[in-house]
Image (tube, rainbow, N blue to C red; front, side, top):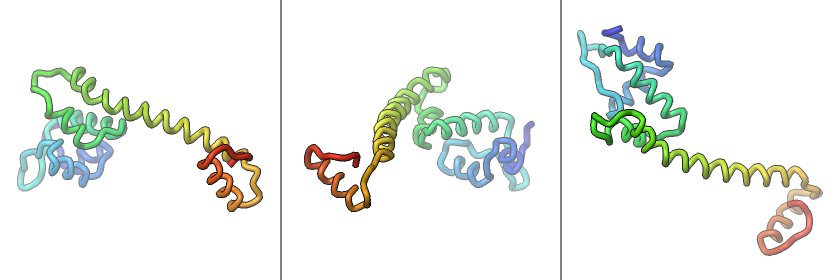
Amino acid sequence: MAGLTISEVARRAGLRPSAIRYYERIGILNAPPRVSGRRSYGPGVLQWLAVISRSRRLGFSLNRIRQLFFAFDASVPAAPRWKAVAGDRLAEVNALITELGSVRAQLEAQGQCDCVSLSECGRRMLEKENGPAEGSC
């Protein structure tokens, strides 16, 4: 698998070549040696990109991914690295779940609206902000 072109790496990783170049530019993917002026990737690049892709799907920022790769001594195994960076993301996800539960409840309540017009909805919403109000809005 040595000597992969950027197009071949992109195809196998399910990415665009521009994404791979961007990851190189920001320092989360090492630039490969060049052969006749073209990038020539070694066999480990696909595993590295798999970690980047999974991290992105889990909502990690590029800075957090950089931390996963480079903020630890090289002797630190993967598990403690993941635990360190995933803890903050898990807290963010739990906060989002809580917020989405509130949004869901509000959407369900809006579905019970019995107003005749949006103006009436707005009036009831303002009344609710200023104290108890009748009606569903």
